[in-house]
Length: 447
Image (cartoon, rainbow, N blue to C red; front, side, top):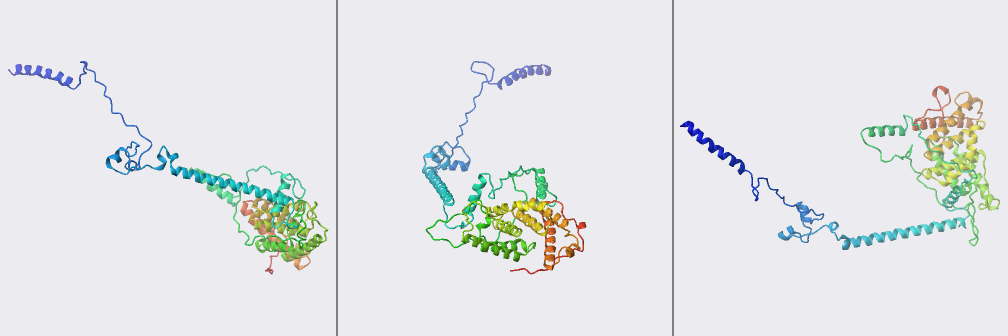
């Protein structure tokens, strides 16, 4: 019976199994066994705007006023001004647009006024002026720039073309070398520089406390009904300043450079400036020289060239590296300075080169200053200033001997200074200098 019972139970299980399998499938209305495709609920389309409450809750908003949620909860439904489709029609946009338009009108008015003022100044400079010399350096600067624009320098020499800038060698003691190492380290970790056009050899410099004052004329002004000429573009820049200003600039140079590098007797330079400008005032007063007429009317003896270098350097100092008058004054004696290299060596030539190197240094041209001071150092060795016996044979007077000693050691220190600054080799080697060369003694400093 157990066998029959097992056999009778087996068909019932088999009969239930297909039903179990078929029960898991839903039949289609047409009687087929294929599963019907279920349609998913369609998601509401996102909108680009939402009220402040929905933004804060980070939930959907229908963009209406009020929206569905704020309306149901009776909340204050507000939208940000920049999210409305009709923002351009809002009062805030109109006020902002009117304000920007007013600012644009003010800028246009300022540009028009600036252009009219520039045209008025240009016409005044080309016409007549209130004094035989400009009250400041602006008129002279405009004249110089106009002469340069025509391809001719103020001193009559053709304008030199600016050569192409090539990569310059930077020694291991220069700032540029250290900055290059730092830049390479930053690039190795993925940090790149944002500005590749940084100036080479940039350095900080203290400005002169007292700027150049307004320059009065050399001679008393004539009557008010007569017109006063302006300085002609071909005139020597020495005519652009008067005696008091020249003496003040000499003191400026002495305070900035002369006290540390006593290459000059500043009192002798000031005495020469006083005599020179006394003569120039007399020449202008007697109509021997007319500043409005063409012609350089320049004086180019060695003492005046040294004075011009002092004045040009002082003007560059007060202009923080830029001075139209200082540049013009140096250009007027540039040919004389260049001729020193090929001329027979003398002490004044060494002084000229040293002052020229100082001039270029304050123009942020340290490599040029290093090059020129190297020439001065070689002239010192050619003259024998690096040997002790020279000072007893060439210089017979004590003042000349002391001045030569101060000049030699000033060139030595400047050569060291700018060699370290540029990373270039020294022009003076310690093995070439006589260890018994006299050292400079203390000298009186004029206040």
